[in-house]
Image 1 (tube, one colour):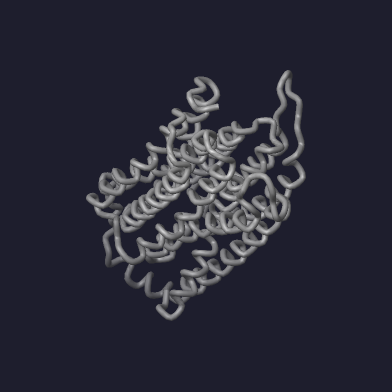
Image 2 (cartoon, one colour):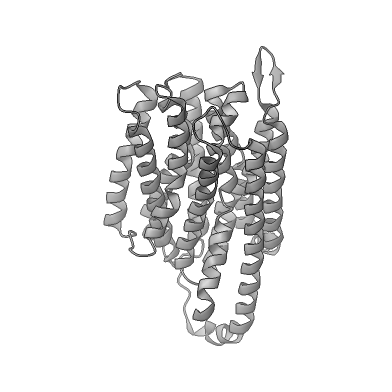
Length: 383
């Protein structure tokens, strides 16, 4: 791709990456409001985490089909991405009609229709890791992977900023959940337009470079690389994704219960808000070496373990420590995931980014199931 058009493509990748987890992030920052009307109350977060991971069945099926019938997935890739972004909008809109609806099941009440709406909007988000990542990898430069992660961070920044504008004190709101969601829908439309722009740029570049590629293809031996070279960053990505996508979002509601209601809202917003800032650091300094990944993993574990302790034991500490720990934990985990993905993107293995996306989803699934069992069967968290 020509250098003159490089920044345009980076912008398109950023806007497209914004959609990857935009809807799920939006639901998380609205939990203080949703928990007021939902019969699940504080347990709603753990239910949503499990709903998210149920949607991981779809990328699992896609992964199986991709490995067995690659020609099928290659043919449907573009229309599938467009369909998923439209499905995302449908799920968001449905949630505005169902978030106050309560269904009686036996002796208990549940937000069944809200959870179904969330399941619908989760499918595009969980598919993003296995569908979007290989697409970005085809653009030619590993730097686009970093930009994609920055875009994912922007997808966290947007709902956080909107939530601050909406009001974070947990009792009064400047605008409703429905208005919030309709604004988010417009950003999904922007991501859809950005994807169309990426398709146009990719196809134009393919036409221009086809002869050059055909002329030089036979002069190079194919090097598929080794999975051993990306084993560490894959494991790091799996663990960091488990913590960031499943564990911490689920336990924040428990960790904040000894404090005032605005502490939970502030912690949730800061947990999401710091993502793009830390992701962007990878553009200026690479943390992808084995030493950097190891040190980052160690440092990121400290605030993360602190939040886990607060969710189990009602410690007497200044309430400001929870939002600060939440922000630091999210930022370091985001940087860790971006650095790991950047190293994976430099691998010559043909399925490196696909494996990275699959590891992200598998890690999130393991984390979600673990937290749900601990919260709802063993009841180890503060209630």
